Amino acid sequence: MDTKKVALGAVLLVVSSVVLLATGALRDTSLLIPAAIASLGMAAGALLVGTAGDGRPV
Image 1 (tube, rainbow, N blue to C red):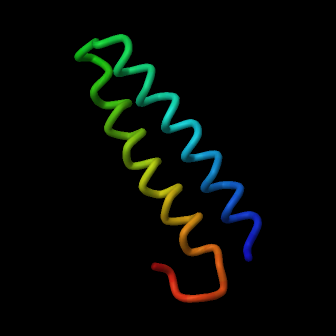
Image 2 (tube, one colour):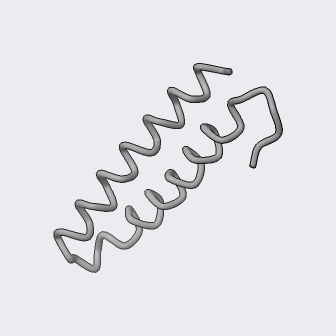
Image 3 (spheres, rainbow, N blue to C red):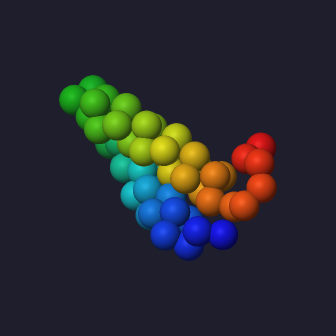
């Protein structure tokens, strides 16, 4: 298992989750772009964690 991929993916997931939760709590329409970027960050983090193993990604 590639620990660098897992670590980077986990960091992306945590940071993106915090940004999404913060934008949801503030309910400001000017925060839609950071929320969209955060959702892309979550997708990238999940992809990195999912493909870090030796077998086929599911």
